[in-house]
Amino acid sequence: MVASPGYLARHGTPAMPEDLAGHDLILTTARPGPPDWRFLVDGRERVLRVVPRLAVNHIEPALLAARDGHGIARPLSYQAADDLAAGTLVRLMPHAEPTPLPVHVVVPTARLMPGRVRAFLDHAVQGLSALAVLRV
Image 1 (cartoon, rainbow, N blue to C red):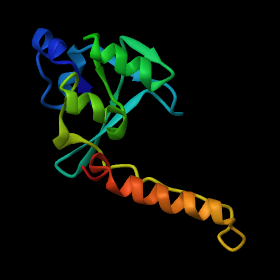
Image 2 (image 1 turned 30 degrees about the vertical axis):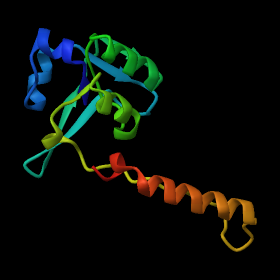
Image 3 (image 1 turned 180 degrees about the horizontal axis):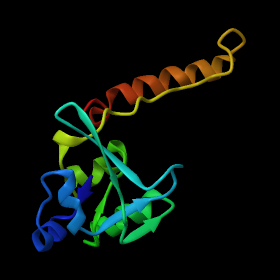
Image 4 (image 1 turned 60 degrees about the vertical axis):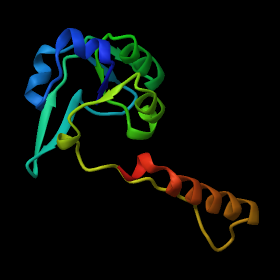
């Protein structure tokens, strides 16, 4: 989860998932499923039903709204990496983040794979492996 320094200065910084009840939340609806945010606290999963202030179907408007101080968003780590590095967004509750989602590269078959596809996969794996944000 991320929020702008200005938003946190005005509304305070939530320390635990239950603290989010008093905050403006920005929901990204691009992923299927109910409006729940999952947390991992002390090895146990907690599920919070989200009542968003703003719901968008793409991550860019969610990040823009968070940058502009309109609330707390929940992007994937690589989606917020530049903002976190620049200080325009602050990472919240890293101790309560759920288990990271793995990155998969899927191909129909490796046996008849064209050389250019193999070259792309090798490049993608090397590039993704080099991203520190995916190892957080």
